Length: 425
Ligand code: S3P
View 1 (cartoon, rainbow, N blue to C red):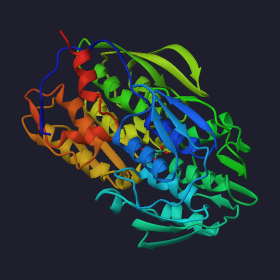
View 2 (view 1 turned 180 degrees about the vertical axis):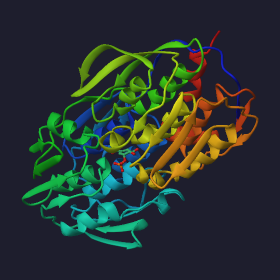
View 3 (view 1 turned 30 degrees about the horizontal axis):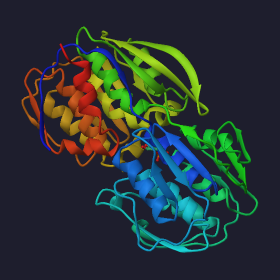
View 4 (view 1 turned 90 degrees about the vertical axis):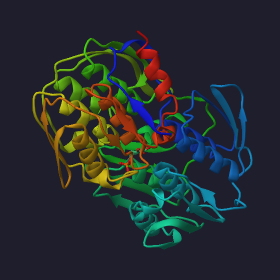
């Protein structure tokens, strides 16, 4: 689906942001391990989470859609060997977290994914799992991968990468391993696994950037998933850069390990208010008011990077509208996402007229530049590149065409509908 994006009227009004992708993956997978029934309310309907849901069904869970918002997962029977290879689609989170579950089962599985997923590095999870005794067959640590289930042993693993996917993989493996499994990372990555494990009664201990788990049985507890700050990010930036905008984004997860974008946009002089703070299934949630603002440049580096890793493409759009030079560094892992997001963002924003250069691990962006548009944008099969380009298109002088915009369905199928809700004049 190719679309055209035109200069926007001000964004006004309220929207409710759909469910968090990371938390939904975990809710589905952890429910599958409870040996009971779990109702998941307000789950993400993005294709990535549907890949996870299909996989737990292939492993023997039954799934009942109660209504548009609620799904009941019945995991009363133990997981069983799937009849066919498991399709992880485009989803790195499905792949890496499921490996932690599957490596310790008493059966074998095969996993595969789409062209983008088949290029992504899996050594980051395979290497530590092998230290726990796991057995794999693969070609250069890439999908497709065969997992030979076996009894795992706990390890004390020091990761050079701050990664919630690696951490969660090892914690899931540790749930079923002998002894204690510990994971330490240089900066704290998103902690949804730790919070949900705690909520479901696992024997987990967190000290700073180190997490340890003992063999535990997760208890069946219903989960309500909050809205996704990574989806809200697109409307936050849109409202900050489209003149006269003033919006409220409701039900956004503002977990400290995910909310780096709020800190950065505030440091850039963005008008952002957090309203109605509350706790939902062990996660902090708020409604967020965002008003058009005169942005100024900033530097983004170090410990904040894992707290906003997925938002960097749209932060780059904001930086193109900020006075001064924005520097983003320590974000080299962006090259290993659904696309090489450093080269993709630079190439597409340059086409629009932004003054942006790539470095090995980030960007140098000079603002404020008028975006002229009048070009065709590629989204590299990457949902976040597609939506970041859309946001930029809202302020381009001339319309832009975005090719294959359907990639948004990976995380945010409701994106266009919510955008039109905010732009009814
Ligand atoms: C995710 C963790 C992040 C993030 C990804 C989702 C998760 O990846 O980029 O979109 O749900 O754990 P890394 O942990 O590899 O940085």
